[in-house]
Amino acid sequence: MTTVSTYIRVSHLEERLSHCHLSVGKSPEPTIHRFEVAPATRQHNKAKQSAFAYNFGIPTLPWINGRDLAGEVIQVSDGCSRLRVGDIVLVPSTDYRDIRKAAFQEYAVATHFNAARIPPTGNIHASASLGVAFVAAALALGVSFGLDFGRIQRCPGPDLPGALLQIDHKEIPTDITDECFRSSSKAERITPGDWLVIWGASTTTGYITLQLAKLAGLKVICVADVARHGAKLLDAGADLLVDRYDTARAVEIIRGVTKERLRYVIDIVGKDTAALLQQTLDASVHDDGSHAHLLGLTGLPKERDSRIVYHTVPIKLFHTSPAVGEATVTWLEELLRTETLRLPEIILADGGLEGINASLEVLRQGKASGKRIVMNLER
Image (cartoon, rainbow, N blue to C red; front, side, top):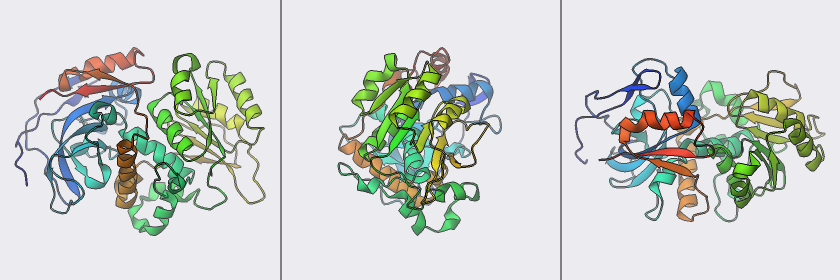
């Protein structure tokens, strides 16, 4: 094993938008399936700023945050054969309660099946912004909606519903078991040629979801600020853009274009826009027993239709199931290697851990719409 520093400096939350530095102790030791990475970059998004500001998702204080990082592998466990010391990787940390995996520290631990190698020609800073957004998009389409990525011609991915049928169900946390199999039947699964609507398509998760959906042959309607983000979404393959500012008209357009036969929608904004998307669906139960499906990443409608199937992304499946986690990151590696995936726009910020607050303030002021801020850690 490679020798590493026995000290670690972390940035942990003491109060809203304020950090205390220089907590000293041993760096986290990798155990079976795990390796240690020295982060070179970390990314911020609007959700992270809100979490810091309102203590959302912070079980105790002090706490270490940060969900996306990229850096160099500096130590691996004996059972880790896929990754080697010196590899440059991006690591989506979906295991929110394990602070050893958090990004806002000088060393972090990760499981090998949750890390994707960045190719030598890749952009480490832009790649750092993919992470959790890619995982959420892949699980939303591949698990919640049952999309088979293996049928993609350009860069085939995993058949996640098929993979779930092969694994030990004990690997799946009980609180997401129903979600993992809700679209497992052939009648419920989204297939090439179906319409999909994404409300919040200019977000990083929306942007990645659009690209994966188009690779798989879906027809995609994107709801966003068309003036600001329309060109980017069209370049990524959107079939139709709908401006988000006139919501009643947006609902009318979607219903008209899909001839009131829409069955799959994803909301990335909140419960109010999820309720608007609910109005666009054909809620009838078809003769084959199939239903309309609505997935909300940040909230679901208060008033619900019993005929519609409602979804939340089973995000913890990524770190609890080695089969699903590894299938997801190895596909991401291939998407990066072949340059099939367009990377999100980023704002590169310097200052390391000390620059976190300033970057969060940029997010709070709304100056990074449709982008992610990537912190460059000076060493």
